[in-house]
Length: 130
Image 1 (tube, rainbow, N blue to C red):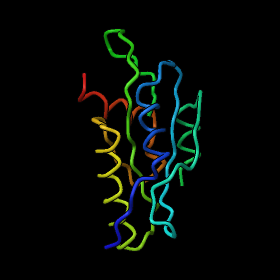
Image 2 (cartoon, rainbow, N blue to C red):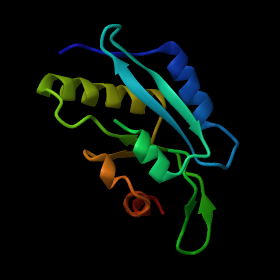
Image 3 (cartoon, rainbow, N blue to C red):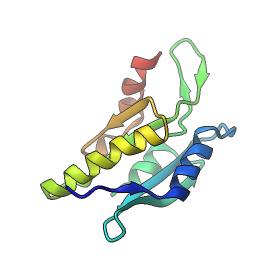
């Protein structure tokens, strides 16, 4: 199995993203550069809705709790393209684990179908972290 590494500039970008002060919804889209064997930055988004993000796929997310409290959870939503070869699926999975560790993420969710990425789906995932 090929081992992929995180691009150093992506590590720094993830660290800054994790500690950002803005309260708008933002996202970082990352991908694997097969040729360089690196996980790299694909695109950054500011003021993006979940619907818009879903449309961009091949989380900061403003979350209003049932009791009215507002939080801005940092979510890592993992999606690998449908129809990938088994060895590519393994590469995605291995890269996911390294990203989660490097960015010190705790809210990690996976979806196999980008159409499932809805407000309702994300709220159900976040309900565990009350």
